Image (cartoon, rainbow, N blue to C red; front, side, top):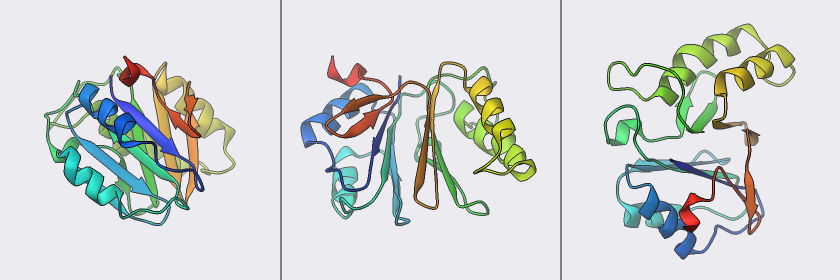
Amino acid sequence: MCCILSKPAGVQIPHIQVLESMYIHNRDGIGFCTSSGKSWHGMSFYKFLSELGKTDDSEEIIIHMRMATHGSVSVKNCHPFYDKEHNIWFAHNGVLPIRSTKDRTDSEIFFRDRFIPMLDAYDYDNSRELWDWVNVERGSSRFIFMRDGEVKRLGTWYEFAGCYFSNLNWQY
């Protein structure tokens, strides 16, 4: 199962041992985005650490370490996914009942083909209909969105050292 780490602004990035343990359990790609607009996607843990080292504790950061269930093990299938028109990032932990097509993940298909059209129809910040729909669609999955530096975490999250994790499987 993938793991998402949500680091709030003003909180330190977890120790390298935490990140390494997450990676050991989720080796199929890494990505991150920040509230200041930095992002990186790749397959190398050491390159990830180098790029993450260029971020600042004052930034919100979303880190996603992937365990492939839909789509190939490749950089293009690494989360978080971004929609430039709406300036929104998205990452997912879990499995959605979506058939993978064109080597896309269930997460990307949900985000681009289902969520973005709903976002066009409803207000991101003030629509109960949008978020009620998203919560039904996600099932037991964990979703995270970041728009204009503001993070929305949906589902069950676990706080550890000031950060939020979509699961704690990396501890075992």
